[in-house]
Length: 87
Image (cartoon, rainbow, N blue to C red):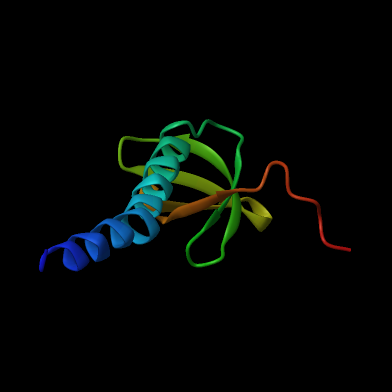
């Protein structure tokens, strides 16, 4: 009976902390794997651009003014295709 509170704390910790984080990581990995040429994206550094080329571990994105940046695939955090432009 002494271990019951400890086990309960571990179970609660699993369902409220670890499980949701694992789900977010899986969704982000699936998103990065599904990227294709022409998608609008945002990097972790806040750089907005459009995907021009995709490699195994990198993405070449085009930013304002026809500039191209080679970034790591793990730096992509959002798809901006459906985003509403700012007024």
